[in-house]
Image (cartoon, rainbow, N blue to C red; front, side, top):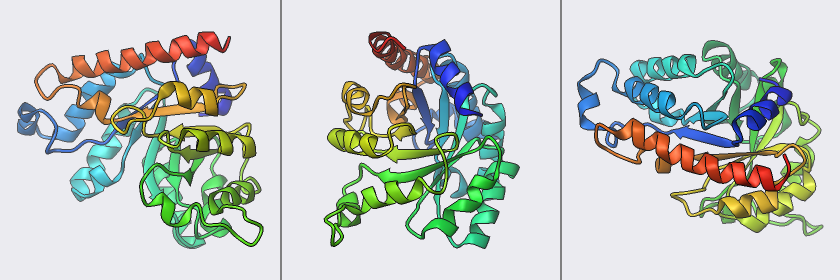
Length: 272
């Protein structure tokens, strides 16, 4: 998916919502466990209920690969089922030396046919650049994360008093462009989103942490907005586990629609 196509989808749906498919067999409705592929059946129902309200889906690969070959099959079936006009993000957080990264890129962009993959940048340029070799595919670099452990390294300063995450942002702009490079920026660090936006004014941000993790959608928009919206705000648990009963898909649709409605008001206020 190109940047222009993504922007058009945001305008058409009046939404910048990404639905996280963190599908946990321990949390899905019990009746689905009797089906041949419970994970896919759950995801299929969630996609059917939410596809009119979101512009991206983000399956977290860990929730699938822990089940071995069957889990990978469920992941591929899920990505294949997502409509072509919706961005598919493989949340894999890979990052390794160049040759290994080439095989990771081949896995996610060719085998799975995902539109984007999340990447950890801390092994440097040669661990990331193989992912840029694919046309109309996206690299989403971890920039400023919302977990407690982010304080361990991301805010360390060098002799010029520049924080590590800011150095990653500045350096990585030499690897890709605003047409194929996004950044993960956690919603629970609202002011930090503004600091990131100053360094990378034109890139899209994938923003987790809204909803169950306590991030504010309004704060994300206030600090992270750019002329092209520039935001994909992810919600996982707050949507896909809105109900554990047979009405799970209906309730997921209602939760997604509620977020989309908030986003539409923001887009209208921004005259987008």
